[in-house]
Length: 309
Image 1 (tube, rainbow, N blue to C red):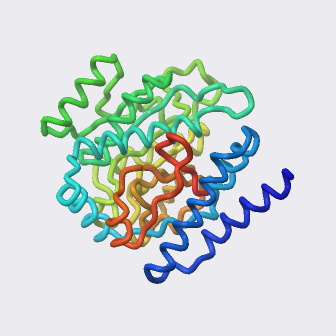
Image 2 (spheres, helix red, strand yellow):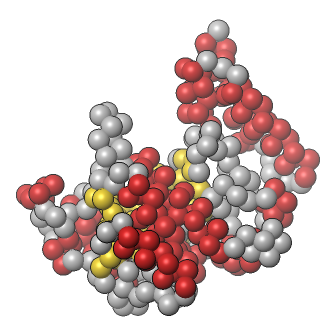
C-alpha cells in the first residue's frame, strides 16, 4: 500500500515536470496534475504527507524563467493591475528570504540553528528585502546584523531601519574587517564570525559588468568569509555582480553562493546556479503567471518558499 502511494505521487509529479509547456491546454494539464498531487498530499497519513512534501519539494517542478526585462515589467504590472504596493511586495519577499534562511540555517540532526546572520543590503528594493528579512529572522530566534552602506532616503526604507533599531539589531556601514579574515581558530567565540551571510545587494536591477564601491569590496569580503570561514552564503533573487540573463559575467571574481532564493520566479541566470535553490513570493495572480510563461510552485502548507533543487 505504501509503495503504491509512493509510485502514484512520483508518477504525478513526474508528469507535471515532463509535460510540454506549450499552449494553454498544456498549462491546464500541468496545473491539473499539480492539483492531484496536492490532493493526495492532503488526504494521506502523516507519514504519507511528509513523503508528498518531499516529492513536491524537488527539482521535478519547473517554474519557468524570467529575463531581466520581463522581471521589470512583471513588477510594474503587479503594482498596477492587481494593485500591490511596493511595501506589500517587499514584506512578502523579505518573509520568503527569512523562511529560506531558517530552513537552511537549522541543522537537520539536532535542530541547532546557525544563529549569527550577516545581511548585506544594497540601496534598492533588493536591499529592502534584506532589511525585512532581518526583522523576521530576529523573531525567528536568530542574531541578525545588517550592513547597509548606502541608505535610502525614501520613507519606507527609513521606517524599515527604525523597525530594526527598535529591536536593537546592529546596522553597520561596512563589513567589519575582522569578519573577513581567517579566524577559524576562534570559532563561535569570534564575535565577528557569521554562520550565514545574506547577499541582498543588487538583485535583478544590476547593470554592467562589475560592481562599484563600496559593494565591490563587500562582495570580495563575502567570498572570503564563505571560503575561509565556511560561512553559508545566500543570495536574494540574483547573486550580486551576476548578469540577470547571462549569469556570472565577472572575470576572476567567482561569486558563487551556496543558496539562491529566487523571488516570484527564477531569473535566466539561475540556470547557471548549481547550489540549493529556493523560490519564494507566494502572491502571483494566475493570469500574470500565464502571461509571462511562469508557474507558481505547489507551496506546501502555509510555507512562503519551496526548494527546487
